View 1 (cartoon, rainbow, N blue to C red):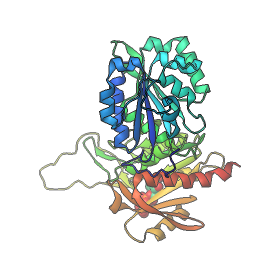
View 2: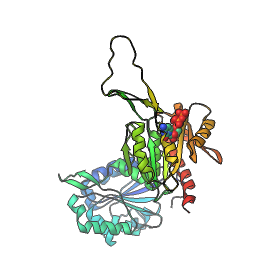
View 3: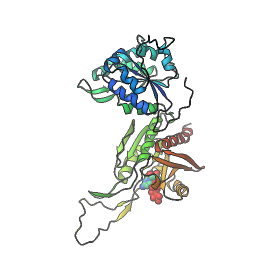
View 4: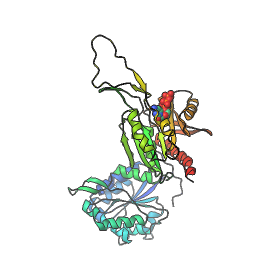
Length: 415
Ligand code: CTP
């Protein structure tokens, strides 16, 4: 077994992991080459095992070059002095990932067959310590067939994790379910798989990004929030096993895998989206930089210069405080509320004031101007018990640390 502790970072999320990557036969083998590369770039060591059918689609030479390790294709491989590659290959591994997993290969797994190296190795792996993940790839009719669905259910019942498949254009020209996930999606799924499931079965609602308050159809007021921290929290919560809903202001960020996203523009729209969701979620993390004011009335047509040199006078009204509104919901409908405080000075004092003013149990304070748009951040947790700094780091690592803190605070409430 590998004894070294696994220390990962967003740049190398799979550092220290040893992954056995199995390829069974299918056109998606071309994506497996990219996936192997993604794994290596993410810091993992990768040992490839291929079936004969996989070797019809891509050569072991390619996979060896990408992983820098000789590929195994036969249980009779004489390179293993004990002639037992089916045993040796998984003994130091953190996971076996079969991508692509063909319909035939899934059928073999379901039946516990072992007539070639890859299925033999899957059967012989230590199930308690070496999880099996499979990424199906096949024609939509094959995927939908009751036999395949029966086999997939059996493979899941036996403890394997099934990644995907996705829907879309297929190599055969048909469109439907059965496409293998893309390489970067598989990498993210595997990274998430290794995160502790501290919020398994829980639900988390997150607001993120700026709001945009219209002045007229072409202009508005907004701010510099990039949404990165909120998106990182949504991702970290999903990785931790929670069902996550993300209410996002206007940002150009990809939705984290497995997260349900609701896009809004203004503070009022954000409140309207959040309120019904808040009652259905156990945790609410408000990271959005909601505009404090909006124009009292947005013009329906573009406001034009009239040539007089006069500047239009805009009247403003205050926006609703979304976090405080949720925190005032009656007990039983109110999620555990976490606020963010973006400050430019006296960070902890202001955060403590917000804790009281908004009536929330936890405020996460940060230096707003120093962090807008950046990938790193530094956070201070402020609650009734005191302050605690999370060590500075990238936003995803901080989000994971915050999720762990929230889990600690939410768990006893259920007991
Ligand atoms: N917040 C909110 N709705 C608002 C304003 C803020 O939900 N209308 C939430 C933010 O998402 C954040 C917290 O309240 O979680 C604090 O936001 P911040 O902008 O730091 O504080 P404000 O209440 O706007 O106070 P100030 O502008 O005076 O610092």
